[in-house]
Amino acid sequence: MTVAPPTRARPDDSGRPVPPGGWLGWISTTDHKRAGLLTTATSLVLLLLMGVLALLMRGQLARPEETFLGPHLYDQVFTVHGSSSRSS
Image 1 (tube, helix red, strand yellow):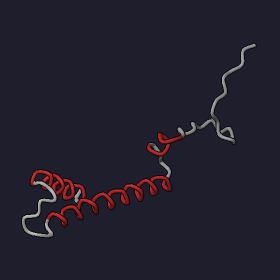
Image 2 (cartoon, one colour):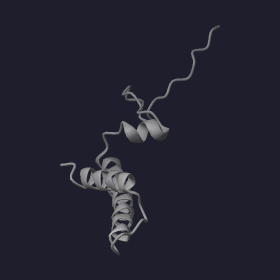
Image 3 (cartoon, rainbow, N blue to C red):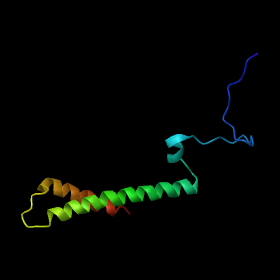
């Protein structure tokens, strides 16, 4: 007698597919609560990153002839800060 492999079914055995678990389940979710958490986490990470870039620029502009950041690196920081904060 052959035994069928176990399938992932919901407890009510409705036959609907079960969404994947782990990080793939979070990335491909359609649940509004999870999507809200992902949006909130992304906005907080970007707020922190853009704040650090803004502090680097302010450190460069604090005094005349400051060499905290080189000209090329300052241009890169300025571009990333400006393009990321105005993505809409």
